[in-house]
Image (cartoon, each protein chain N blue to C red):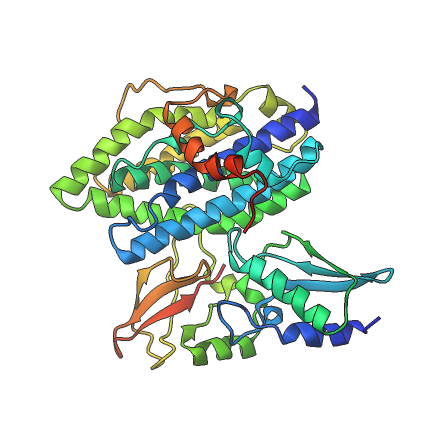
Length: 252
Length: 163
């Protein structure tokens, strides 16, 4: 694998994570529990999709096959998406939505802080921009986890259930392969294994305040680094890509 | 070729599509103007990654330049340095306040800690000036604003959050 190929896959991994998280969250638009939260979810979804758009534009440039960000978002199939299992999990209830984004936001806050130091200037610039937005996202989800956990019996049960169900998809966030090895050598990517301890520390700090706990002895599900996904991604892509595939090059 | 200073004047006449009391220049979106040969290069930077107003702003720049007889130009987007509310001057902040939007505090003084999310910003009500206000939601009607309410005059208001 060349450095260029590794960078292309790495950018897809970053972009897909935000594209899929953002698309999932956009499903909350008009379905939020109350108006302000509806607006918050839509705003965060917009940040995530906007960031994915910037990264995909750069990925298309790195690939050098004259493609656009839209081509990469709408014309790739499931097996060529590199978002984690966590990102594609459905919005079962509001607690699931917040836990999914909380786990992802803590991870992003660490990864993007590292990527601002990347030797790849474009990636470092995109990361610096995204980090400002992630700071607000994480603040929002952390506060929700605390309110739900330290709230009523129902909210606590629901948020704990969501944690128990979604925690098994978090191991994958730190998984590395040849792509990482090549890019770490070039000082483009960061060492994900070094981020696991700070991730757990931050997650546990919030959960403790929320009177919640992480499950123990969880078997961590893996596969997305190789383009393997849970059954949920295919349905999401079918909806997300339908218009572009039915009317190629559609614009408005 | 129109002198750069005149082009700045043209651009200063373009209002932000969401907050029409301030111009896209005051907002700090337009970073630089230069000529490459006969071609004018306009460098812009997005406020928020997904800000939908960026498309409208690009279109407004196109239309305004054409109306002023400038045909040969290109708009380039840069991400670095990342846009910050600190680029807004005191005059622009005062315009926001008069419009009913609490202007952003200075980022240098209120930098959010990425991991703890700590910050105790004092946001003053744009209507009565009271500092006795509370945050309703961090995310408001547009990507750049949060929702607050004033505990004294009881008016809700938007705060242009500092990033």
